[in-house]
Image 1: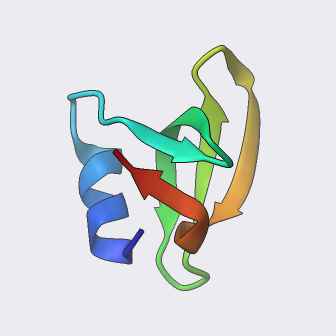
Image 2: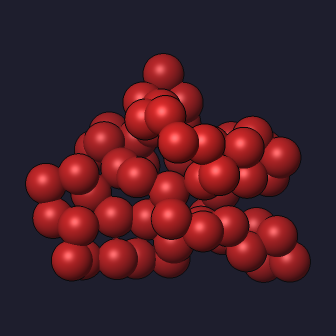
Length: 59
């Protein structure tokens, strides 16, 4: 996923279908400098992780 689209999704009030390793996730924040995002899975919001934007897929 490109950086600008990740930023759009993170700031959007609507839920967008995004996956990381085929698992649905929610993008919390985007680190533009490192091109990573803080995400969590929809079923475990307490488990945040930082992942490369390139590994995020919008469906």
